[in-house]
Length: 124
Image 1 (tube, rainbow, N blue to C red):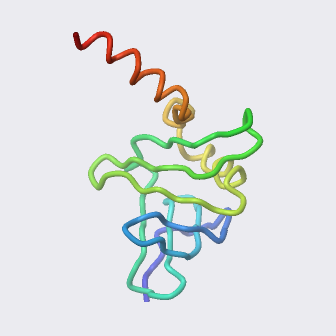
Image 2: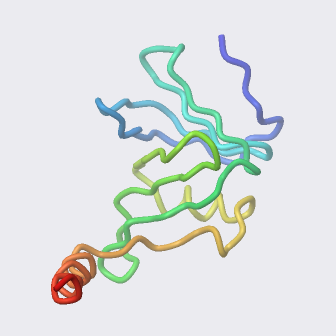
């Protein structure tokens, strides 16, 4: 059995971790770390201490009414993408532990297309 890093839990929420195959489980946000535990395999878990988080980006649609998923970029282990039923609540809970300058809104699909078109003219 895995030992949790947290001593106090703020929120527990059903979630999906996007890796090679989507993994369903639960997100646990507490006073020391962000944790994800797979519901089917107890050996598959992710524990990210708050001081290890470099950046949190969220995909925001309809002017903030819907947030589909968010990504946590760590200092050493790369980027992890998650989604939950109450993504807004999860991100609001994370605000207590992650500084505001490290929580960003991801670029929209159209902004990425525009940037790609604009860069085509600069390459010539």
